[in-house]
Amino acid sequence: MTVSINDYKAIVIGGSAGSFSVVSKMLAKIKPDFKLPIIICMHRLKHVRSGLVDSLNIKSNIPVVEPFDKDKIEPGKVYIAPSNYHLFIEFDNTFSLSTEGVHNHSRPAIDYTLSSAATSFRGKLIGIILTGANKDGAQGMKQIHTKNGYTIVQDPKTCDIVTMPKATLDLFTPKAIMSPDEITNFLNNLE
Amino acid sequence: MEKLNFKTYLEELKKYSRYNFCGYSENSIYRRLEKVLTDKRISLEELLDITKKDQKFVDNLVDEITVNTTDLFRDPDTWVYLYNHLYKKLISKDTINVWHAGCSTGQEVYSSLILFNELGVLDKVNVIATDLNSKVLKAAQNGEYSYKINKLYSKSYKDLFDRINPDGNDFSHYFDVDIDNDLIKVKDFLRKVPKYKRHDLVEEDIPFYQKFDVIFCRNVMIYFDGDLQLNVVRKFFDKMNGGASLILGSHESLHGFFKTRFTKKGLVYTKTNTFHYKYK
View (cartoon, each protein chain N blue to C red):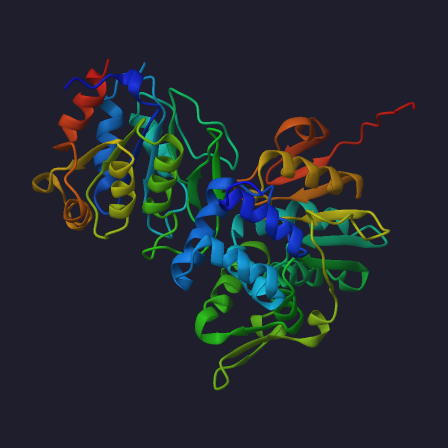
């Protein structure tokens, strides 16, 4: 089955422990004219509030920003959930933020970003879950799967910590299990 | 009535109670409603039924679907900025009018008052703090916080003071700590300053005569959709002195028309002094 980029409106990526270097490498290899917005929700250490976007921007081929509330989701941008806020995707293709309580000990919570993206984009969404030491994100991935989005789980063999991908694999069988390089190639080869 | 869904439910809620959530960001308010249904194991039809009959239930429901997160000196960078670049400029005024819109349990109100007191102008500030939720408003008024949950307050306090005024007052100047009773309590000289009032930014006009020099509305409008945000900012704008400041959350910004009526410096939106005359 060929996967056409025109069938999709956005990519969402969730990751926790170990995912920073994976995301960083992926963004360094993604082609500069990649036309879908990439929305990333990563757990981060509480004391590391700033610097994440800067360090990703040094390597990334696509500009990386932390969205503000109600910002429009635009192609050709990478969005990272800001520290201490949950990041949601609304029906009108904008972001909304929330400071409600932690979910799975996390704010931002990957489940929230992924499942709100699934609600808004339905089948026109590619969801990717990366390495992590927490089950947050598994339910969100399942939502994407249920709404017929395309789901990719990082191959546990290539994960620093397998809890997050494993929790996802326990819930359903994704469309693909891939190494970080394979994920980047998959995205770059979408036509 | 149309088929019952979250949207039509919120319209019904508006009819049967004083609460209007119709202009809230859809995806997030629907999700919080869904959580209520799951937690209570009821259907949306049942929820509507109870909503129509039981006002107390509705008040509790509102507690659950609204968000009340706040902290002492939350986002320290913001407070460093306010202290150095805003409050130090305000102290020459005869009175300083401050409004905390959506004050939740009051930590932000006391954070701000502490900084005014450090600058020696506590007697000049006129502080109003409002919230939709009368329960959190009461907590704010009491100025009592759980020690267990908030024991890091003295650390946030010290960290901030190391940055703005290392010779300032200690934490104990403003708070009594009673570990046995699990309490951190704001001292009365501070606690008695703000006037607390229940107020609904969405449904009500602004009930104050005075215009404000500073309006805090942090992480409140993130729950509103774009149109509702515009409405609320318009109300703020009309109640601000020229050059007054609007303080939003660290990842909030102004959109649409009002973007042009404010200039943003650092973390503060300042009402521009340009006058626009309108002839009728």
